[in-house]
Image 1 (spheres, rainbow, N blue to C red):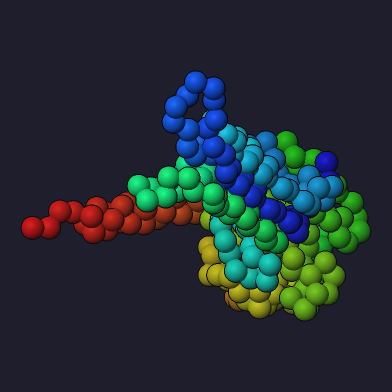
Image 2: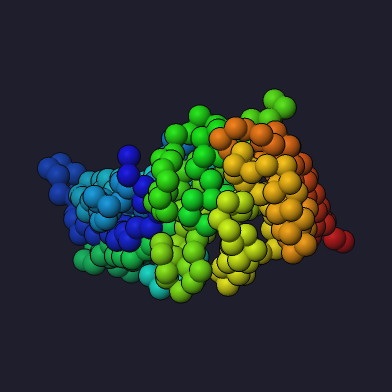
Length: 351
């Protein structure tokens, strides 16, 4: 399945059916009068976060979604049938943006979350509704309310606990393959990864999700290389894993490049907890490992040693990530509890 994380979609809700102008005329019935029914309501356009999807590829082949119109009212006080709703099913983590690609209409970050994007028009009244004591035979009815037509953008931000950062060929895909059942492409040339990959990683009987995104290069925020278009997939992560290639020969420059790019990107990425790892230590002797570790710790703080190939140091890195994830979850629970308490105080009864 191809990966697509941005799609332009055109939606339109259904228009309401018109009310009917009708009069009751039956043999042997002494009194007639108006009996026009109301029109049916138009269908609405909904969007729902569902399980089992991790791409917006379906919206490449269909971009127009129109809900059904309501039927017109009929005589004998018959109301028109309402139009059927239409539901856009998207992966969890999808943002709905307005046509300007900046205004966020909705953020579907919870499984089963469902939001109405365009409400269907109301059906018009039939002439029965307009009957009064002074107007016994009204010959007017309302037309249905028109539907809502709009253009939206869908942008997917993957839901993951940990995001992998690093230059191309830093060993991100190797790490993901070594710690999970994911099978990303691994090769000895840059930009092997062309789209994000997800893997479920387990340590000490606890599982969490890791997102591998294409490597960044200097100037990615200006569009160089693959740019920073995939950094949105690690915005929701609890922690970042920064892999630095210990065999590159430009260790500190590589580290600064990634740090500068996430700072230029913004969106709070630079403030997230970050685990720095000196990778590919299987290609170094003990003396070289310690020298490079001390050199990197001087600018980056604590540094872990790891090899995705030999799996040396993997467990320590995973345990460090797990502790950061647990801290983030506890913080989120505390914030949610505080919001619920504030809401209860606001709605409490006052004499």
